[in-house]
Amino acid sequence: MKIAVCPGSFDPVTLGHIDIIERGAELFDKVIVLVMTNSAKKAMFTVDERLNLLRRCIKGKNIEVDTYNGLLVNYAKEKNAVAIVKGLRAVSDFDYEFQQALTNKSLLPQLETVFLTAKGENMFLSSSMVKEVCRLGGDISQFVPNEISNDVIKRCKGEISND
Image 1 (cartoon, one colour):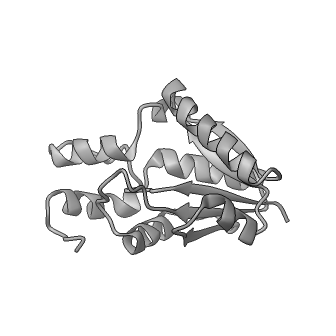
Image 2: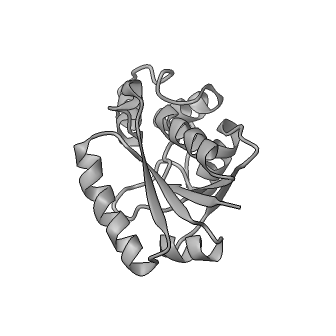
């Protein structure tokens, strides 16, 4: 069985994330969507909330959702993954992701990184952009799955606390 890991902070999950996850699931027998913490960012949703949001949005039978707080390569090795699946929106993404891929390859040489390019309509889409549009009262319905849109809006408005 060919297992891939699709890591990210998913804070919140966007339609761009869902697209990459579903396309990865077409390439591998199993994809594990791995919610990780990005220490450089202040999260809008807790890890448990992000797990729940992802589970509500993902429909694939060969897709699992999990979380991990250590090195990605250690998790991949533990799960016998053969690849990491990452989405690329622009050249700026590539620079960072390429460095990550090279680091991961040096730590676990048998682990490949597969880059999937974003669809045209998702080239600009990021969780940070969704949060900013939402905080300023904009319509995010075209950016996030319908299943979680109200959760994101309520959190942006401060109607739900993440404490």
